[in-house]
Amino acid sequence: MNLIVSYISNFLSRKGSYVFFATIFARIFSFLAAWFALKLIPNKELGVVLFAYNIIVFIIPISGLGLHQSFIRYGALLKTKAEKNSLFLYVFKKGIWVSLLLIACICLISFFIDFQFKNTRTYLIVLSFIIIPSFLLEIIKAQLRLNHENKKFAFTEITQSILLLISVLILSYYFKELGYAVALLITPTLTAVLFIKKIGINFKLKNKLTITDSTFWKYGFFASLSNVVTQLLFVIDILLIGYLLADTEMVTNYRYISLIPFSLLFLPRVFMATDFVTFTEKIYDKAYIKKYIKSYMLLFLLISIVLVVTSYFLGDFILALLDSNFSKYTQTFLILIIGVCGIFIFRGLFGNLLSSIGKAHINYYIASFALLLNIVSNYYLIPKYGIKGAAITSAILMWFTGVVSVIAFKLLYKKVLLKTE
Image (cartoon, rainbow, N blue to C red; front, side, top):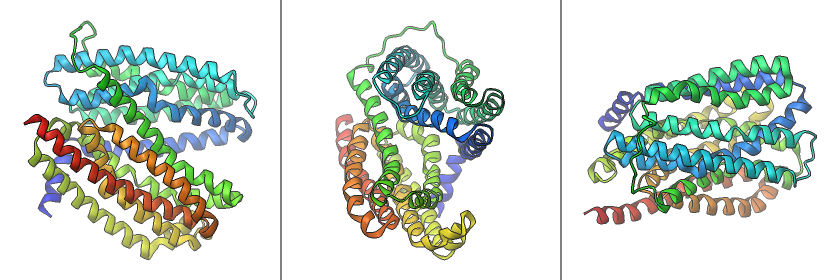
C-alpha cells in the first residue's frame, strides 16, 4: 500500500491531477461540440463532413512522419535546454515540410477516388490542412512535457476544448456544415498560436545534433503507425459485426455497450502522458524503473479488481442507464471490462516502456499481429456468438498484446542495459 501511496503522491507532484481533469474536461467538451453540431446541421450534410474528417483522423498520427513522437522520446534523453531547443527547431522545420507533402498527396489522391457522397472531396481537401496545426500543437505539448510543465500541458487540452466548443457553436450556427469543417480546422491552429510563445523556444538557435539520423526518423514513423493500427483494432470489431451479421442494430448495440469500457482507457493514458518524460529520463536506472513498474501495476491491479467486481454486480444497472434494452448484454459488457484490465495492468505501461527504450517498432509489430488475429478470430466467433464473440476476441487480444509487451520489454531492456554498461 505504501508503494501505491508514494506512486500517487509522485504523480500529483508532477501535476498529474491537472492532466487527469483536463482529459475529462476535454472529453465532455468534445461531446458537447459534437452534440451541438448534430443539432445545428442537417444529418445528411453533417455525415459528409464527418466521413471526410474520420479519414483525416486516421492520418493525423503520421503527420510529420511521426517526428513529434521522436521528439518526446529523444528530447527526454538530452541533458541541456539548448539541445532540446535545437531538437524542437529541427522537428518543427522538417515536420512542417513533411506535413505539407502529406497534404499534397491527400489532395492529389482525392481526385482519383469516386466518392459516394457529394462534396466529400472538397471537405477532405479542406480538412487535410488540419494536419499542420495538429502536428505543431503536438510538438508544443511535447516541449511542455519535456520542460516538466504538465500544468501548462493540461491547459493546452482545456483551451483547445473550449475553442472547439465555441467555434463549432458559432460557425455551425451561421455556416452549417462548412462552418463545422472550418471550426475543426481553426481550433488546433488557434491553440498552437496561443501556446507557442509559452514554450520558451529560441528560434535563432541553430546547434546541430547527432541524434537526428535515420534511427530518429524510423522511431517516430513506427510509433505513429502503431497508433494508427491500435485505432484500427477498436474500429475493426464494428466493421466486422456490420459485415458478418448484416444487422445495423447489432452494430449500434456493440457501439454503446463498448462505450464505457473503451472510454476507461483514458486512465492509463493520463498516467503515461504525465510520467513518460520522467521515466524516459531515468530509463537506464534499473532500480527506479523496477520500482515504477511495481507501483504502477499494483495501482492498476487494484483499480481493475474494483472495476470487475462493480461490473459483475452492477453491470445490468449501468447498461440500463444507457438503454433498458442493453441489460441483456451484461456478459458482453463484463467481458470487455475484463479485457480492458489487460491494458490497464500490462499494455498501457509496457507499450510506453518499449517506446521509452527506443523500440516503438515492436509496438507496431505487436499491434499489427493483433489486428490480423482480430480479423481471423472474429470471422469465427461473431457468426457463432454474435456481439459477445467480438467482445471475447477484443478481451483476449487486449491481454495478449499486454503480455507480449511485457515479454518484449524484459528481453530488450536487458540488451539496452548491457550496451550502456
